[in-house]
Structures are given as C-alpha cells and as structure tokens.
Image (cartoon, rainbow, N blue to C red):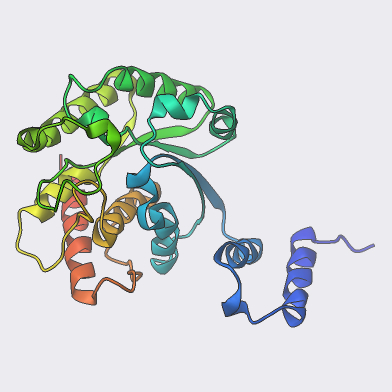
Length: 276
C-alpha cells in the first residue's frame, strides 16, 4: 500500500486550481502569498511585530520577507503585524485579541515603544517598565524578543507634520537629545532583560550625517520609503544572521544607487558590530 505524501497532494491540488482562477499576477497580495507559502518547502521562521506607525509605514514587516526571498534566504519567513497609529505597548496589552496574538507560538516577537515616550526620561512614564514586563512574557512563552530601536524626531519639515497627538508640547530643541535617550533606555532595557536590539536608530544617524539625494523621513516623525527599507534590511539581517550584500530587492521608488547606499550602511554597521 502506498504511503500518501500529504504535502505533495496539497501542492498538486493547489496547482490544479490555478487553471480555474484568474491570472496569478492579478491575485490580491495576501492570497498570492498564502499560495506561495503552501508550495514553499523551506523550513519556516515566524515573527510577530507589535508597534505603531513607525512599524506599519510602507508595510515594512512584509518588506523584510521580500528582502529575504531576494537574498536566497534558506528559510521561509512567516511575518504578522499588530500595529495601529499612535498606540503604546501599554495600550496594546489592554486589547484581549492582541494579548492572544502575543501568546501564540512565535520564533521572534518584535516590540516598538511609542515615539513620544522615547523623547526624554520625563515623557516615558511607565513605557520602559511595560516593555520589560512584556519582554519577560515573550521569553516565558519560548519566543525570542527584540526591540525595534527607532529614531529621533526632526524639525526639518513643515508645520510639525506627522507628529502624534502624544507629542504635543514637546520642544524641537529636545529632538537632538532624543537620539541619546533612545539609545540609553534601550541599552538599559537590554542589560535588564537580555532582549535583543535591532538598532535602526544608529544606522539612521550615520546616514543622516552623510551627503545623499534621499531623505529618511516622510515628515517630522514617520519613515519615508527609504527609512522603512533601512529598517527592513536591519530586520532581515537580525532574523537571518546574514549580511545584506546578497539582497537584490528594492522598492520601486528607490533607485538602484540609493538602495546600494542604504545596504552598504547596514553592512558596515553589521561588520563593526561583529568586530566588537
């Protein structure tokens, strides 16, 4: 009696349905992605992103998957996101559905603190205590937590555009010091809990300081497509342990030359980190 390979049968059924459906390239993105996953025999790595607009702008977590596939990563990345505008980790935890999502089995859980809570030690409130508690929950569930270390505000935009309501009253004079506070507080959190840091903010500052023809900010707060590409490259490097030199994916809005500049900045950061 023949032993049935369930995966092979499923793949055959799914392929067969292609003849009854509209052209593959016209499918909605998520449906196409589910079919690709069903036919993809690579081992799977799962990741959940929990944050707000700095996470969901330009669908950054999905960009990580596209980057990984373009680089020939040997694993299939299954990534989900729970991110809403101007929401803190404390507010996320008040939502039972978000709680249940976090409690599901994951390989990685990425957390992002609300930007206004990172402006200074005085504006943080309970944010860092909430983050520490959530990190420990994630660790207890068997997942590996990471912090998405983001960037300072900038006053190089019109009318304070893009700032969250929670940032009302924050002075632009404090924006340069915000970077130092972000770095200090995340370093303290890592020392306290052992959480990994995906330090986009450090590479962001390096790129800000060098001549370039693109901007990382969409407004005073949010990332442009270039900023989101930088973040996605950093997360690919974190999940895979690989450099980004083999990455070929770039968003259509980014020129090949600008993509190389961003990838090189990430590569130099990774090389320096490996040497410490």
